[in-house]
Image (cartoon, rainbow, N blue to C red; front, side, top):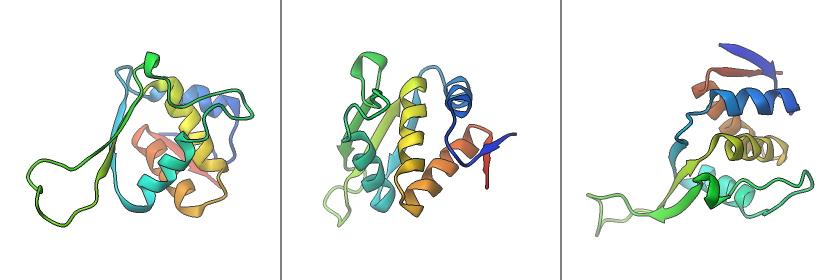
Amino acid sequence: MKTSSSIWTDRLGVAIAKAAPKAGYSMSLVGEDRQNVVAAVNQGIDSHLEACFVPARGDCFKFRTPEGIRGKISAARLECKVSPRSLAVLIRRLMESGDEAAAVLASDICQILEIELIQ
């Protein structure tokens, strides 16, 4: 597992984009994780002049109720497929949000990519 600082650097962004699946990183989110990703994506183009929702790259974010639980009480899930380049932007936004839960989600995604963020 590669280690990196928990402070955003361009080098970390390159490592994330390299480690991400070329076909896109898929995740299904609920609760606070869902809200943190929605907030990060809804920023549009940020001060770095980057976006993390670019359909031309294959990015897709949709609210869905999973099969098999229709008619039961359940919140919609945010189904995500994020291109490698957009994933790096999304993780940076989560890390820089100032929200502890968002930073934990960023760290969890990095761990799945075998990148450990250290303090």
